[in-house]
Amino acid sequence: GGFHGAQGKQAVKGRSVLKAFWVTVSNPKSFLFFVAFMPQFINKKEFFLPQLLILGGTYLSLGLLNDMTYTILADKAGLFLNRYSPQKIIYRIGALNMIVTGILVFARIAK
Image: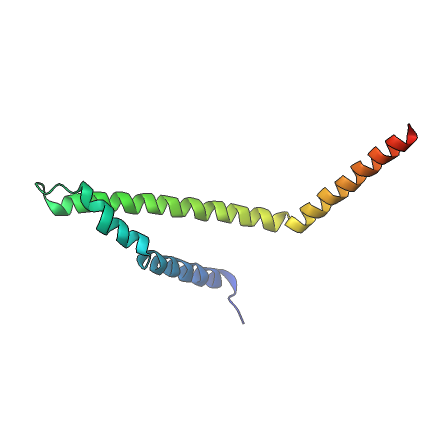
């Protein structure tokens, strides 16, 4: 069997969130950012922890905004593609092309 109803959707979402968390945590890009890039912005004459919290929070917020944007766009694209099957769109474009070509050929022969 599979998942059924609201509990199944909730379980899938929970697994997706957990998977996204582990992918983000294990991403070497984040580690390289903090090791190579962020220290340039730390002032050694000031307290370390507040700077780390502000810079880390900013990085986390921008990353979250970026991930949310991609997630929303992907969801909208999925809804669009499920509603309007790409195959159906391609068939309609092909049919329209054949109709227009037929009209143009007929008009040329009729001259």
